[in-house]
Image (tube, rainbow, N blue to C red; front, side, top):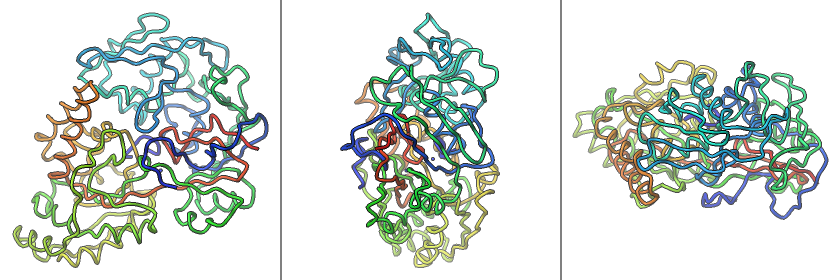
Length: 507
């Protein structure tokens, strides 16, 4: 899941102000011209908005064809098609007020029933983003009037606004063929060749044109699977923008004045992790889990795996996000203490197999680098290298593997917590053992509606996970994008790998 799953990045402090390549604030937007942008594609490409979050180039295209209820900026919601989103007193029902004056590309005016239909479809089709709204009470949800949607929930959720700002694409009520659903975004799809390219044209009647784009006469999205080929095409002038470049490009292109190669703010970096399943031996013993965490030389992994471009991880998701507790002590590197813990657990000479793959940058590289580190703590590690195409294909295997590498792509912290931890987690790589302890903390987090309570309850969960969780989240790594000097206005808006081209322009 490239955009919303746990799976899918000059380093700022994650305040949402920094942007990926193309976001040169000194350039003045101008109308006209064509932008060609390259992103990763694949055999599963589709024009169905409920499938868009599964393939990189599909998601980029969807962001300019279908507007959303809201979008994320610095980990907080910015409302788009919604004018306002408010909870009741106990966060069991949310009311969405629809923005006035929005039209779809076929001239239809946006109404509350369109938003309700879209939410129902995203959840019922089990789209990745729909997974964040699975406790929406669809049977009792209703459009109260033309501009008001009432959304009752099956459980209290003080962070449901984050879910509603999480790529909830809106299309007209009653749409039968989702692959041809019209949108209210700034561009319309004119031509599409799966696995090759999409050509989009601007809308002259775009509802939000007074606040930005569309500026381009034409936008072409080109499917290029290989990162090296995307960089080569950018350098040769085949593209004006390329997403998902290799981390090495930060160094190799540093002196290239024809390009801008940039990384996003830190809240949009990827977490490199070694999750241990607490329900499977040998990680049923907390001393073994702690020993593995202490055995990892995180500073060394940052230098070698992230080429010095990343930062040390502290076994917790969500660093630099609004609700992250930065006061939690950093996990130390202490192989001698790790040995002592293993001896106490009766696990001297422990052998483990780490399942890994090159599916994401840094996962296989870090697993290789960990082998001698673990050996210093008395742990013999071998690697089970799985082809990238097969790594996430068998969910049963993923959930029954004692230890494996993973790359957690950025999601709003409260939603990430619910994705990875507790008895109802959708992607519990550390297992559900101990859910009886963390479930009440997550439930209290879900009930929080006031900002001070939200922060405190998220901190409660993080402190528990830092002490008792199975994640050895050892490093955080930026993703890289590049643009020609004349391309501007590309903005992360929550997802650095697959940014918004709504305001893109060329000089």
